[in-house]
Length: 147
Image (cartoon, rainbow, N blue to C red):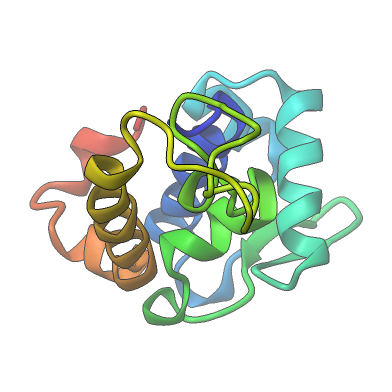
């Protein structure tokens, strides 16, 4: 459902939330190594999030990335929207262009009605689940270093 890029973005934001206390900046090489994500790929992801003010970034020898907002204000939907967009919450599950998910004049696809409720539940979950809530559910945060 979510792209690998989006999953990496969520993992990186959780990592920064767990390890970036007191507005500490964490270098991209450290994040990349800890999460086992290629540095150039992770750099593009983090820059996208920083451009939208979800993260903050500082250049230079003591630079790196940190959170741009409190964890309670970063919902999963914010990350998903920046990386993947909201299509998963609006488009046809099986990809029919004629489905009324994609066009007002369209006809419902064979799974449209069954999926409509699930799609709404997913949207509600991603909208209400914050990075802060996720972290509060992590009993021993050291277990999640490799998220």
